[in-house]
Image 1: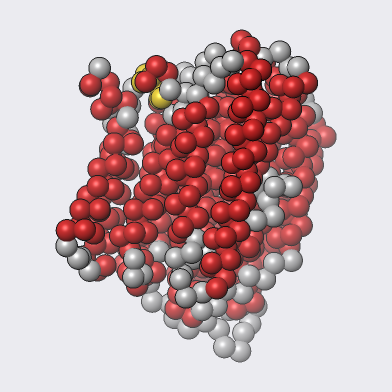
Image 2: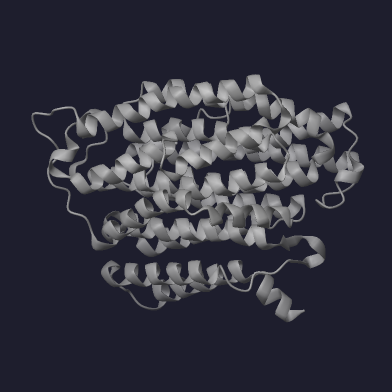
Length: 469
């Protein structure tokens, strides 16, 4: 039994070990950021590598905690994401007065995401969701001297508290109706009654807040703009990826008997999210707000695949989140490097960026090409599999609307690329000096954007994991 505990909860225990080590370093002796950050990066890399070994299926605590190969791979994606964040934002992290506290909060949030992915009932799910949310809200206010950062943290706290209240109300309704909170027991107790549908709507609303699904997206752009770019990257990539994973489990496993009901809801919200995200992204000038509405639109495409309720839908979502980690983090990494050294965050400031900064210009171009779904980047294959999975229901009007939104998104992504490579600027951004780890992180992201799409065995491996669930 003890062996099962250490093996099945390997991902969470490794994060806990790094957390305790950082606490000892913080309390026991002061370590300068120049020494601490490489140590953190090494530990996160070791954690990422270890996530691929000794992954077994099983449950603990009476089914409250459950894991399998697919969940382990999802955690590996998030582990890789936080390692890339430690590389890409090294310049900002080294200059931070509270580096240990930031990493501790980040890892606490990631531990919450891991427990959330492995939740076997609504009690652990809710506790894990709160553990994954509150540290990020504190991280949003890490630029203590900036008023806009405090506003961002306050908006996130308020929206998170509101969504948590709605989630608890939905869980209490569902428990009152069925007398169960375990995911395994729930499907046999659901019959699609009006009260159950109401409880489900409350539950899905909470997911809508966390994923920034329209119309629950209003907090997103303001928080993204006000928070430090490193925190914005965590929110946009790591947090959203984990919520997408647990949404798959919740809809496909817990609420499978109510598929006809939630399919219509997901379809309508997917269309609204794609359209609103795209239309607002068209008119953004701040790069962080631009990427905020871009991420909202990307969530709309994820919902297209989720609506299918098929193995292909599971594989497409996991595969796309993997691609999204590389693509979005690359874009945020370039934005952070420019903002850190010049203070510029407007897209107009990126005019003629290529003139003095060819390397980061190509990384940004690769990231935006991938987010737009342009071949041969991995984003093309990701979008293709999302839409193909969504077409399984035969609702071709839905798929046509999604395809049209893909065309709209091309415009605003290519608008940024045009500014970087083709527009002229009297005073283009000077040469950006990159930390070695930042350059390494950008190279990893660029390689991931290309290789994840070209290496077909990655998708085959994911669909094999999805089929074995």
